[in-house]
Structure formats: C-alpha cells, structure tokens
View 1 (cartoon, rainbow, N blue to C red):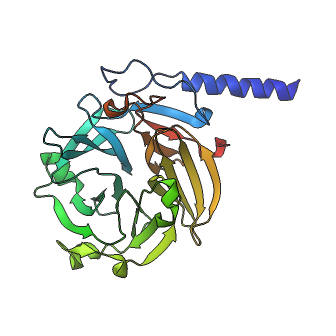
View 2 (tube, rainbow, N blue to C red):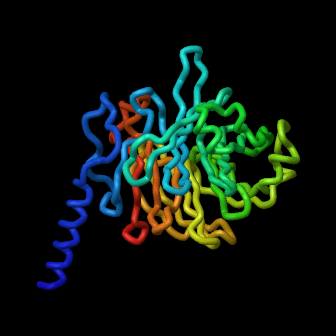
Length: 297
C-alpha cells in the first residue's frame, strides 16, 4: 500500500499547487484558464501575463534580477503592430514599468546579456537596450545601445544568451523544418554593424532547431531548451548543445512562447493562448508560469 499512498499524496500535492490562486492582475475579459494539460503537474507558480486587457499578445520572456520581463505586440489601427516590453516583480507579479519599441512588428524574443543590457529580437531586427533608462522613461529613445537588421536567412523569432554570445532562432512550420535554425551571434555586432544589416556570413555558429520554435534558453553550458507551439500543440525540447540533436521532447500547454531558467532551477515560460487575439483557441492560458523540469514526462 505504501507505493499507492505516496502516489496519492503526490497527486494531491500537484492538485493543490495547480489550484493555488493565479498571481498578478487578472484581465477583465477572461473568466478561466485551462485546468489541465499535458505535464500540468510540473507547473508551479502562475502569474497573469501583462498587457492582456490592452490587447498585447505575450511573446518573449527573460529574467533580470528580481524582475520578469515579457515582450508583447498588439495590432495597430493602421494595420501595423506596436511592441512593448513589460517588467514585473518576480515575487508578486505586480507591474514594475514598461517601454515601447517603435517600428516593431512582433518582439518575439528577449535576452538579458549582462551590464544592464537587454536584447529585443523582432522578426528582422535586433535592438540592444539599456534597461534602466528604458523602463525609467517608458521609451526606447535615449536607451538604445545599438541596432542591427537581420538579412538573408537570419530571423529573430526568439532569442537567448549563453553567458558570452547572443543566439537567435527562426520560427518555421513543420513542412519547412529544414529552414529552422539557431544562430550564435557575437555581441560586438551591435558596435561593428550599428544601423546596418547582419547576415549569415557574420554569425559564429549555426545549429538545427525544431520547427515551430517560439522560445529558447540555456541550462548550463551543455543543454539548450526550445519551446515550440501553435494553436494546437505545445512542446519543450531538450537539445544537446554540441550537436543540436533533440534528446527529449515533452508536451505542454499550447501557445508556449518565451522561456528562461530562474536562479532556483525552475523554467519560467509564457503562453499566448487566451490573449485577446486568440480567444478562439481550444485552451486559454495567458500566463507567466514556472515549470519543474524534473517532473516533465
């Protein structure tokens, strides 16, 4: 009976954790979130993604000290898009400022790269930003520390930092999986190419990537995690850094986007499922949430 008892206790604990109140500010338009999904028992804290009531769709995620950063976009009335980077207190989920990025379509990736600097990745452009200046003013103006365009086969669908270099990746649908790539880029390109384009001839390394890639982060120096998703699926891939080979794939909530490891080893993530733009999706989970990767099946 002891194995059954421990299994029952674990199930009760997981249910209690998932039933804990969602932190932060609940959007007025949404009544509930998905109660269960694949590997939901690996999810711990849950916080409402910022900007939902204003129509922002969550995209990138990064951690900076005591804060969680989330980027998002919303469609403008002129048919374009507007991007914003939000800062939240990690302990409470309460807002701690934001700044806007003009001439931005998606803001799919965020990466803190040291020295108080943040890289924001858009589909075809990268911005390096002095975070404190940007959050203090709410504007990119005066806080920009270099920008480069992305040309050829380089796309900034998501971004990550390995402790030395920046990585960017391209989102592709599954039938175009051969075009899904990860590229390592030296940070010096922001000084050497400021205002100009970066292409594949100037990247330091290229690795294959799973299709539908939406987020990327490093676990130590030897392991990469990639979040892939659509309106129908959500996956977390654990990848060998040296080769780009997928070691494991775990199912998770649809719409999973940016990911980043926290100081205690938990994997933070954000999902766009249930943003105003995606109310028609089969599940709603527009949350920033922590994942215990040891519990993934």
